[in-house]
Image 1 (tube, rainbow, N blue to C red):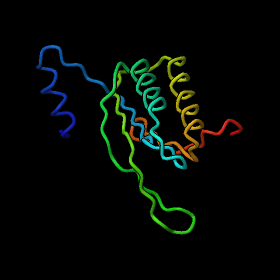
Image 2: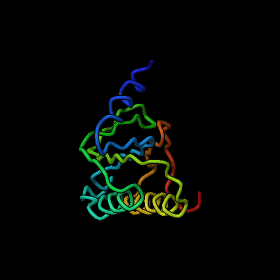
Image 3: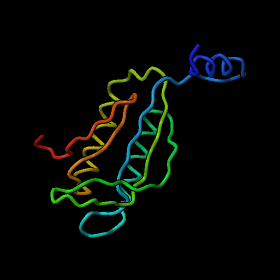
Length: 130
């Protein structure tokens, strides 16, 4: 047996335990890249969209780092949002969630937005024309 199946076996014996097979993770910067101002409205919009789509979030602070075109490593403070869900099948909620990510990415003048769904990571441009 795998570790996962052992955990599931134990969890099933706990009254009220629910197996949530899916997960979504979003990492988003806390500060505007050129103005340095806090992105409070955008961060709140992500929390709201994830809570409505998935029933809630767990959040923590971190650093997001990448290598720019000149080879320098750039790091910035980010907020990480994590949600678990069970058989997420509501296409309208999924579309609204993704549209929110695109909108806040444009508002924050981001070149890219990072999301991980079901263990697969995606980096996409929030620009409207794409």
